[in-house]
Image (cartoon, rainbow, N blue to C red; front, side, top):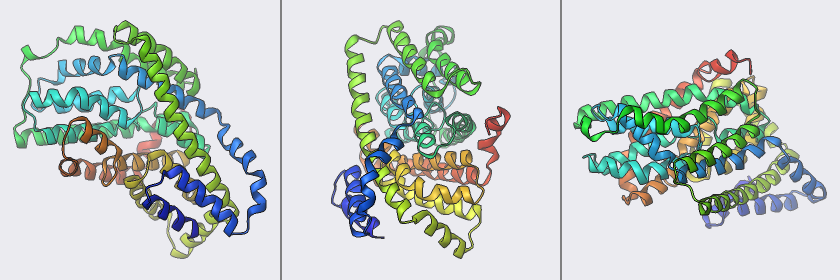
Length: 424
């Protein structure tokens, strides 16, 4: 309770979450008379960060940024428009399908929202879609990015909780496609109800030229996933291939300059610096949590409450959903997963299923008020009032929460593919 009070006070003061957690953890060491254990803290921090799977994360971030700058989004949008734009509400379907393809190289909801907010939302407005709806479905579909691999949050969770990243990649495919199907069904309903426009053939790109232009971008996820799932490459090696391919595709599209390489490398370094500061703070927190036996205390409380595995999963969903509404995704996972995951594993919950549920849950928080990262990015990118955007997004948010419930109660959705590939 002491550390939670310190963290809450620090967050309300507006301080950075990494400094808040780190300072609260050190204060708890002192106040709980555990100062003597701080002598081994540097060694413990290094061992927690010295994880091979973490190597994949900066490379995928770098590759995703290069793809954003190299014309990938426009190529994928043109291809999706060529065969979906003819339908009523077609640009909504294009929005969702572009996010599916984009997920295979970006793996970031915020990156997807920024890219599609700059390119597709203005086009939807030009063709007669309300700005509220165009921004809302863009935000909702961007959540597909961190679920369909390669995904930085799945890599982060797997490295942090020592769960197979390859198995998590396989487990994320069906939930991500199911989310896309749900969003496309909702878009079809809104297109019928609100009479959204469909494109005329003369307004749309030709299928064959747009397919050929988008083919390198669409082939990249197949190469990455195929190589990873069938054991030809580790996730880190697949990330390196993604960087090389991103460079090749960017220069082939003639939209990538040498300055873009420097800007992408600089942005990747800044993101990694912020991320590893959080990891150091969370590792300090995990150490004091282990010394104070907080996971064991939670397990004893759950036992007194008489919760079974499914009831416990629902409790975990509530905790992570609330955390996702107010915290950075990776910070929330790093803060709460080491406390709640060991109890779930002791109850016999499959670690891969649990990882998908937690990552889907915490990513959905990017679409929820008050501090949803996707909402903030879109409100700035498309110049829409924040609360107006929230109102338009709520139906999609509730649909994603309902799908989270389905994934929680039907683990076979997540585990079917990893089992078929012999990964679990």
